[in-house]
Length: 274
Image 1: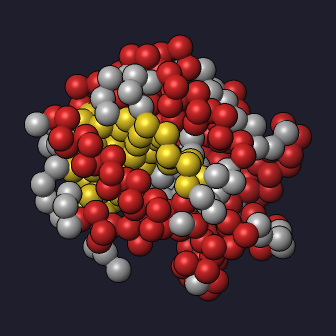
Image 2 (image 1 turned 45 degrees about the vertical axis):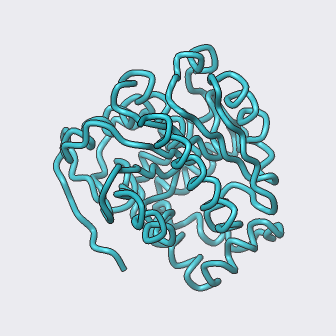
C-alpha cells in the first residue's frame, strides 16, 4: 500500500499518491472513482516518471465540498498542480476525469506537456435515463452511495469486465468499489451525474489542443467508441488506440496493452518536447 499524502489547495484538502521522479504524469479518475483506480499501475510508471494519482473533490479521501461541476473540478486540478509546485506535466484523464482534464487544458494549455484521453467524451454521455438517475439519486441521498453496491453485485458481468475482476481478484474488486462508494459524497453523485449527461459540448474547441495526444478506449466500451474517434480525428495529430478485450477500465481489463499504450504515448511526447 502506498502512502497517502494530503495538501491544501483552494478550500480543499486533496489526497494523493506520489511516486518516482523525472517528468510528472498526473492520473485523474472518473465519476465514483478515486486514486484506487490506478493503484496497480503506479509502480510501473514510477520507474520512468513521477506519477501522481489524486482524489477529486467529493471522492476518495479528499474534501467533500460543493459546488460539484466539471469546471470547478478543472480549477481544482490546476490549483493542485500549483500547490505541488508542478509547472507542467503529462496528464491522463479517465471517463469524467477526461472531461475535467480537457477543460483544464483548454483554459491553461501552458501547464500540460501531453494528454491521454481514456474512455471519455467531449460532450454529454447518457448512461442512464433521467428517471433512473433520479431514482439512484434518491437512494444515495437517503442511504449513502454505498447503497448502490447491492444492485451492482447482482448484475451479470460481460467478459471484458470479468477480466478486470479477475485481475484484481473478486474480493479486492468489490472491496475497492465499497471503499470508493462509502467515501463519495452523495451530493457529488447527484450533481456530477447530471452534469455528465448535460455538460457543455467541447467538440468545437478540440482543435485548440496542440500537445501530443493519445485517445485510448476499450474495444467493448460502446458508449465511448464514437466520441473517442471524434476526439482522435479532431485533435491535431492525435493517435487513437483501441484496447482489445477491454471495456471502460482497460487498466484492469487488459493491463499489459494499456501500459504499452501509455508507455508509447509518453515516449512520443518526451521525444517531441526535446
